[in-house]
Length: 202
Length: 151
Image 1 (spheres, rainbow over the protein chains, first blue to last red):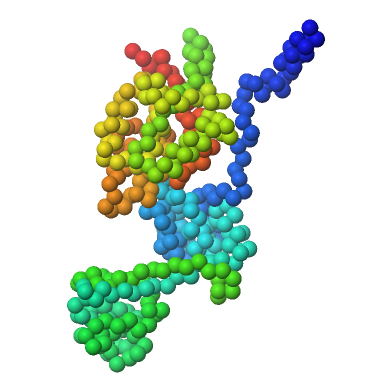
Image 2: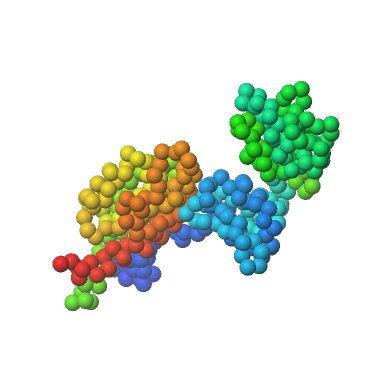
């Protein structure tokens, strides 16, 4: 008898009734490590396009020209929330979750360079790549025609009938050589490496 | 009459049956939908039941970028669901094709081209909370003036 009274009293408690009739799970909190879609901070975008170049999802981020300067825009239906754009941005224009705090704490950054690759079986030694390259033209204005050059400072030149790449590190990634190659023999690849510590600060 | 109708609709919208169909995803979103069923997010406490049978479903969760084999079959599944019904696109794939939206891939997103989509849950994959919120927010819409609009 006493137990029945106890249970009736228990079941009439307002908290119990509320718990019973309304939603119940443990509160669905967002974990601290959650990265949402990148949002803009008030830092100014310099339109270096690092974010667009590193983005693995097609059409997820675009740097758009607004009235006062450039602004990166993230498209939710395309973005996979990997956070690479946030990490890659040198200015810290984007923020998402605690990515910026972690990169600052661990001193991590991305370093990138361009790799030039010539497929010798496709290359027909026309020298278009060497002639069209805007960096080459600046270094050696005499460079023309067959792509041979007396200068050792050019990015690439024709040596003994084949393209030799001398200074890959000077490449700016404009891909003019790729566009001017009749055989698609030369390829410009952007290489990205994660670095940590003093390297990252430099 | 309308008060009675409101009560009926309110009660009905707390008893939603869900069916999900994977039209060529990477299984990431499937696992997030599965996480909704697991005790942590526990979709059943909201009165949502997953039978995965289109004939008794109210909500169809479409997962994945549509592969060509699924184009006609998805249409069939959609037609099997009795009225009232809604479809929810889960993840980026049915919205845009996500990472599969490249030249040379055998996918034909978006899913809106094949069946009407009531809600989209972007994410790759979306969090179970987001999926749950989407289902809960379309639930009242399914039965909204349901009986009035019938002939």
